[in-house]
Image (cartoon, rainbow, N blue to C red; front, side, top):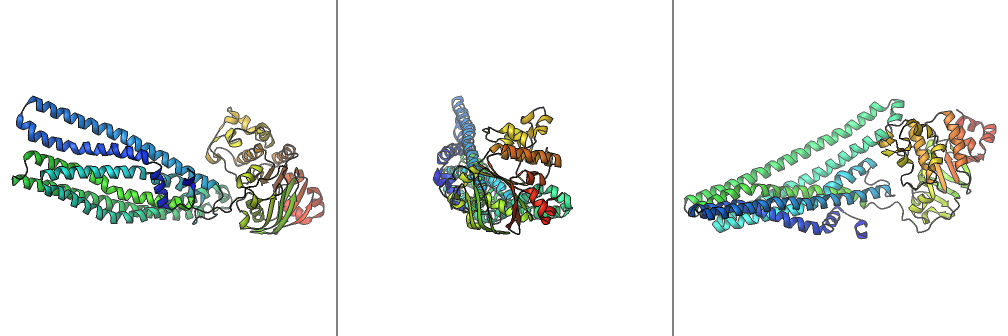
Length: 566
């Protein structure tokens, strides 16, 4: 199974992988669906034989055999369809799940920062719609083969009546597929473009939801809505183009199939009129001409679905084949929790240098918000070692020598906009259910009032993105989750910007108490948190310009007073 997750993985390779690991289900589905199509084809053939022989003999025995034969055919049609589709749809659903998990895993791991401009909302669309459409190839191939079985059986049966009828079906089918194969290429390219535009619209919505409060704050919601409307309009226009192409394809396929069926019926009628085929063979030919329209329709639609599946696979390949930001090392940090930033240059950081000894509680007061964001990106390994100059050491080991999993197990960086998930308060605070400090984390983050407010307590249902919580409640819930993780090193970025001053004071004292003896770094301009820290580092213009206690800095640094006073 490991080979299925290797990179690079172009779209065609993804489809081959999907087909290869579902070969058993596809063979079973193909046999059952082929049996279904063969039984369907046998129905008009049986009717022709009944007319040819039974009606001439006019015996009850022959009639009973005919009725029994039709019953067997109908039963075969029903059961083969039922179990064939069950096998294929189960394989389809399972395969779609596999690709969703793989895309999600890539989205959660550090991959290239910009994957052809894809944003998180676009990756979500790829993990859902594109994964589903790629997995459709599991059903498409067996249905394609089974439809071919129906056409071949019909052509053979008609050839037995008159070779011209069989040749007409074969030549007509080849002609129809040749025309539709050309049209399906246009569908594939149009669909790929539509999927990209819909994904961009989804990403825009996600960005707007995340930034809704700030947008309302400075009156930018109308401009943001206009931006989304333009993106959505592009997606709508492309969807209309795809619908137009699909409509032309479906109309052409239906018209060509009808022409072929009419040609077979008319040719059979002419041959019967000339006395070259019997009445029973005429009934069979007309019945087959009507019947083969359905498998021909299915057969002619398959190229379209193949192109759609390939277009979706190509989009999945953008994520699955994206190179990692860095090749992680095999080392693990030593226990203890010291953190060293040595000469880091990234974004607005200009040779940043500081050390936090194991067990210290240090606050960093950034004068420029951008510098704080750049530092958080480096510590969270969102900007990997090759993306910046300098060295970051954790537990005495350089980050470049550590696996990402080891870094995140040892050091938790909690951003100011940490996500809140649908579930309960408990599952948001302790997703794994293994925290030994859950109650202490709830108390330290002052989330106790939220828990007490609801009858279900920690089992109170939380909507996606914390829609039923206030901004302050969401922030305290995020802080509780960070504290409950109880990692050796904890980095908090603006953990109390949405809470009132009194609550902020209590939270600051609680963090200092709960994290005593554990390494804690708080990037903030909150006086309460700065005062609770053992020492404060002033981050100005990308470097540390001052270091002291909060109160000493207040007493001797006027610029610091202006920056942090409220």
